[in-house]
Amino acid sequence: MKDFKIKISLFFLTPVFLVLLFLTGEFIFINFHLGDGLIWGIKRHKGYYKIIPYGMTGNKSPFKDFPKDEVPTINSRGFRNREFKDIPDKGVIRIVTLGESSTFGYHNTDATTYPSQLEQYLQKIRPFSRIEVINAGVPMLNINSMKNLLKHEIVHYRPRVITLYSSYNDVIDSTYQKNFISMLYNYLYKHSEFGVWITSRIKILIARDTDVGERFLPQISKEEIDLSVENVKKFYFANFQEMIGLCRQNNIRFIFIKQPTGNPQSYLTLDAEFLKLSYKEKELYYKTKLEKNGSLNILESKFYIQRILSQAINEFLHKQKISYVDFTSTAEKHIEWFSGPVHLNATGNRFLAQAIGDKINTIIK
Image (cartoon, rainbow, N blue to C red; front, side, top):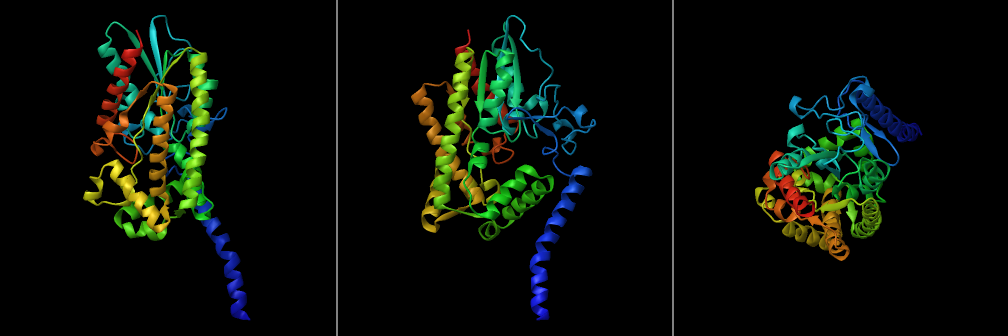
């Protein structure tokens, strides 16, 4: 009877202890600023988020742990940009780059983000034009948030051109998961400073031992993956279509940039031979694994779902006759351009900026 009471006590007390432990960790990370700072450094607006200017957080930068040259300049509007006027001066060609952390320039310097390099490149090839590029990329945004940002704010800045570089976050946000561990993993990653630290440690552990990924990471069934594909396509294209409509109503030229698929191998293996595989070969590898095992782990599933979404986007672009830049085909051959699963380094951003700039140069007279 005594042993039974001990087991019952442990059954109820263990989760309480774990919750208290987690809350203590979260309190320490937030109050002593031990995490990335992006969770408490972002403010919600009308259906979207922007970075809080440093002065609004007690002059504490949410990027305090970044290397000094990577600390971004955040203007009073919450964008990674110098200050700009509500309406551009006469003769100025204003371009707004919409996107997520890849556009924001996570761990890039101010001068090496692709929006910054795009402005430099366009000014170089159009020396008699006055170019202004506004970096409207915000970490963790999905396409619904970008649509709201466009609708409630960007259109009022009267840009001539808007570019959209996005798909990765939509796969993360729209993945169907009935597995509690999977939902908890994603929630912690997006809403908790301590959770971000925990999930990043898990990824490092996986990179050192691929067997850990198979044993520890949540497994997503084929049924869940199929539902995820339907969910993300429905969600993505509904918002995408509305964004195109907003641009047409406001006489804004729209350019879509095909985003390279997030690289799960950045976390899942250090195998040099696997890293050399093309995206199509990796896709085939995961497709075969899914058919054989009936599931993929959560990181592999995101790669696989994004590949399917990318194919659907290609069909949509051609059907709707939308201007686009195919950066995927180029970037897939240059893994050295990446600083992480989707983030580009200064060199990758330079080639992306040139590709976008060449496209813009053909549609603006």
